[in-house]
Amino acid sequence: MTNTTPPHSERRPVAWLNDQFLASSDARAIRMLAEYLEPLSHFRRERVRDTVVFFGSARIHDGQGPLARYYDDARTLARLLTEWSQSLPDGTHQFVVCSGGGPGIMEAANRGAFEMGAPTPGLNITLPHEQRANPYVTPSLSFKFHYFAIRKMHFMMRAKALVAFPGGFGTLDELFEVITLVQTQKAKPVPIILFGKDYWKRLINLDVLVEDGTISPKDLDLIQYTDDPEEAWQMIRKFYDLPEA
Image (tube, rainbow, N blue to C red; front, top):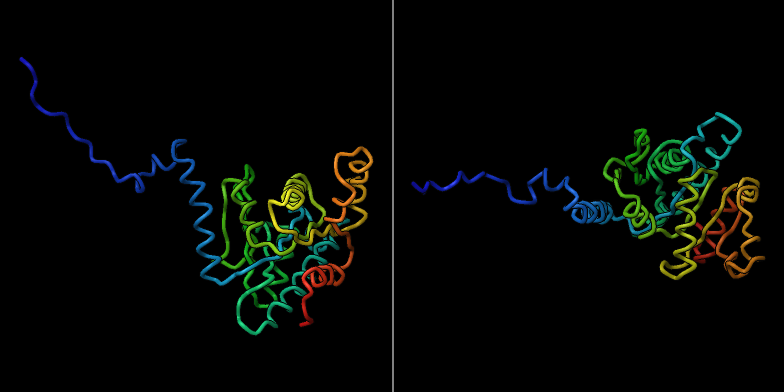
């Protein structure tokens, strides 16, 4: 005899409440979109119009090791930028100091802005060895990403300048992504400042690229070098013809 009893209908949540689906490979595009939209809403709410992005090693600490002075320099530069931003009359946050949100140079940048009483975002990322947000990141502007690509997009979306301090593979990855975007006109020109002349000159010989014809001589003009926080700030001021604070 044929069974005419209908099968049990499983109660399932709607798709956007289905954690199992959202964690699946089929929903990767949704997760990427969420990583794009969620920080965007916070930046708008906090009225952060644009940023100066600090890149650099997570392994450079305050008062520790041969590169420790770069921690102090990043902190000082962040304070200079923030002092100018706070002098603006309309209350909109411009030239907001932004970092990758972790320790080292990232912490120094956020710390300098924090000490001036300003909001300072941190765009952290999940790593095999857990990287925690440093304590100076503004809580409402503290983000953690899974996708490097979306994180990089947020770095560049509102960046008015990039300052790269000595760092490792991650810093190099972020730096050359920015250089490439500006060179290919996928992003607007911004000051790209390499802080620590000796470090960067020893690490990267960009003249070889010109000599062998893989870049144009004018491409070297995309980058500036300095060892001084005040000079770095003046490079940014000159690029945008900004008034004194």
